[in-house]
Image (cartoon, rainbow, N blue to C red):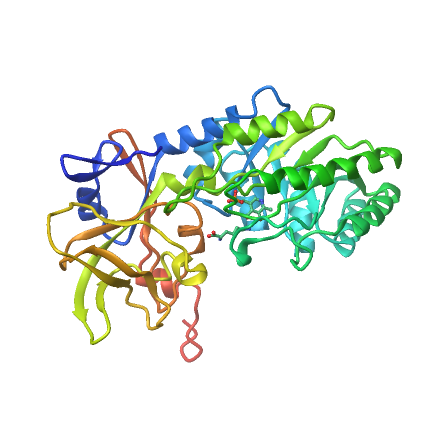
Length: 418
Ligand SMILES: Cc1ncc(COP(=O)(O)O)c(C=O)c1O
Ligand SMILES: N[C@@H](CCCC[NH3+])C(=O)O
């Protein structure tokens, strides 16, 4: 359920008319709904009520400061994968003791930054990383709380680019390597192994892969206990899918119940790192039709948003529902919705049957609240879109549209030095 619905034949974002928002703030435009973010966070977090748990929103899905703050105010922690995300999380007022840090390429300066901030734990993904965390912590006279990211070799049955828990993926350590690494961690003075972590992939539409991964982790947990390690946190990552088209992912409640059953004998705090399931359907991206044209093979609708604004269709062949902001009765036909970027792969949809769209009208790409703006770039020197957050009858610009000056702000002309 989200708060982008049609009323009297016009798309609304909570109490706002989307066409009016587009006219006021310009396009392409990301619009997020406060009520939907709150609703999704609450639905997710309350699905684990009764379990000792911490929900750490995955900042990579939507790292806008206002979104992080909104979720933080509801009690969320944050899952980060870079120093930049740590910086954002702290700026948004997230308590360091609710921050977990994953990623295969943490650098010394990022480790220092996270140690200084005193985050809850590092989800460590290799032995050299473990050794570096130990070294940096010792230099600072600190002890880093860590878990190891275990790659349980479970097929999440999702797009190959977003599977992360298969043995061919770069993430984490396999069970055998993890055992070795925990032995090492136990003896290193600069780290305190307090947790186990895994994240098997994104946009999962069934519970089974989560449970399979958990079973493997539980067997491993027993081994760690025998090794004398006091594991207090079990981080199961994120990954719960959403409906973009006709997918029917489990409700968080179903995941909560299944995990509660499986975890009942374990004395650990469960950490969850949901991203998409909270933010995905809490945002839309609105663009304006520029031109239409028909070749021998296809009808094209050219809009002012491109792959630099929303890359998921180009990158994964991902489906985003597209619909008119002010629908009218007219002929439907198959078309490609394409952007102005000079790449054949620049499309929001291919061979999609939609009403014949007219220049000047707006269309909305739904389910764009996660991995939408965060994956945007300035390719083709296109200033990035504005982001607005609506809350009932209030709308706030939470990131202004970039300007041409922004495009060159960090550059120096080698000739003039300016
Ligand atoms: C380590 C980690 N945690 C959490 C997430 C969030 O995943 P999702 O948005 O599918 O919930 C990701 C992304 O896949 C991730 O890599
Ligand atoms: N960016 C991806 C998800 C990858 C998640 C990061 N581990 C998407 O748009 O679906």
